[in-house]
Length: 130
Image (cartoon, rainbow, N blue to C red):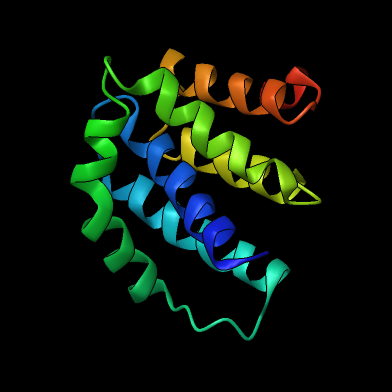
């Protein structure tokens, strides 16, 4: 996974939090856990700590929130997901997205839509997002 793919991975996890226009502490914790789990799969030597993942989230939160708002949602999502098509095994990423989606105790329709779009874009079974 190259640097752009890693950035897009964090971006799509962040999008999953922000797409319902609410941020809960549980979601940020799930983001940090997901980032660490994906790091361990991709490159365990990658310099990333939970604190660094949280800093990344807060540093990009405003821009990503704007990018998933109504006028920009479709183009932003399609661009990020398309760039991630080259990542060989997306099972871990789908699982991470699901974990972030349910971390606040409920799954919103906007989160389901993002998961379904990811599965469709990557040619995965859309039943994975149930």
